[in-house]
Figure (cartoon, rainbow, N blue to C red):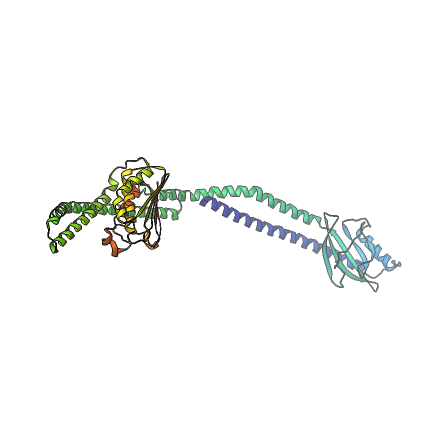
Length: 461
C-alpha cells in the first residue's frame, strides 16, 4: 500500500472517529441539558402546585377534602381538558386517583412512588412514539396525606436527539467522503517528493548510479534525505570505480604472470617428458616424475586462471541444442575415467535449450569432474545425467557437501576437504568457472547435497 493511501486512510479514520466522538458527546450533552431543564421546570411546577393544594381550606370550601382538592386542581389548570401536560391527585400510596387535569388515564411506572419531602421523576414511553416526564411528590391537606403526580410531554427531546444523530450520520456519509478526498490530495502532495525519491533509489539499487535525485521538496526532512542519498550515491560510484580498477589490475597481473609462466613451464614439461623414458630406475626417475607431474598441475592451473579471466570477454554464441545428445557427447570425454573409477553412467530424459554449447560444455564438464572426484571412495558409484526442457540435472552418489560449505564452493581456490586436494588433483577453480559461466549465460544453478549420500546439481535455463 502506498504511503499517500495509507496516510489518507489513517487520518480520515482518525478524523471521523474524533468527529463522531465529539458529535456523540455533543448530542448527549444537549440531550442531558434538555432533560435537566424539563425536570427542573416540572419540579418547579410540582412544588408550586403542591403549595396551592396543601393550603388550609377556606371558609367557602365546605365540601369534602377530595372535592376541595379537585376544585383547586381544576382552578389551577383552568379546566380539566389537558392531554399532554397536567397533574393527578392521589391518595398517599399513589394508586387510587382522586382528581386529574388530564383527559387520559395516567399510569405510574413500577418503582415510582411518592416520598414525603422529596420529588421523584421518571421518563416513560407512551403511545409508541411519545414520551412523558412524570414527577411525583407528597403533600398534606387538612390533616391527611396525599400524593401529586405531575406530567409533561418531552417527546421533542427525543425527536431532537434523533435529528442530531441523523445529521451526524449524514455528515459521515457526505462529509466523510469529502474529507477522505481532501486528505488524499494533501497526502499525495506531501508524499510526491518521497515517491520520486523512492523511484530514483530503486534505479540506484538496480545499478544506475547516473540518476539525479530530487531536492526541490518543501519538506526539510525529504530534502535532507535526498542530499544524504546523493552523497552515498557518489561514494558508491567512487568505490565501484576503485574496485573495478583494482580488479582490472589484478586481472592484468594474473594474465601477465600466467603468460610469463607458460614459456618456462612448456620447457619443463617438454624436457621432463623427453628424459623420463630414458631415465634409469631410482631417484633420478622419481625426481623427473615429480617434476613432470608438478609441471602438468601448474599448466592446468594457468589454463584455469586464463579461462576465468577471459570468460566474460568472449561473446556468447547461443543456439538451440538437443540436451540428451549434448550430455552424451560431453560424457564421452570422461569415458576412461568413469571406467577406471568403476562408475556407472546413466543418461536420461529429453528436451532442448537455447544457449552457448561451448560454455555449457565447460560448465557441465567441471560438474562431472567434481562428481567423479567425489565418488573416489564411495561404495556405490553412480553418475546420472538427466535432461528436461530447459533443464539439466547432474546427480552423483559421492561423499556430499556439508550444508555450511554449499555457499562457499563457488569461491576461487575453496576446497571442502583441503587435506585431499592434491590427491584429487584439483585447485578449487572448477566451480568458480562454473559460477562465472552461470552468470554469463544467465542460468539458475541450485545444489542439494547430503554428506555421505551424494549431490544433485540442477541447471535451469
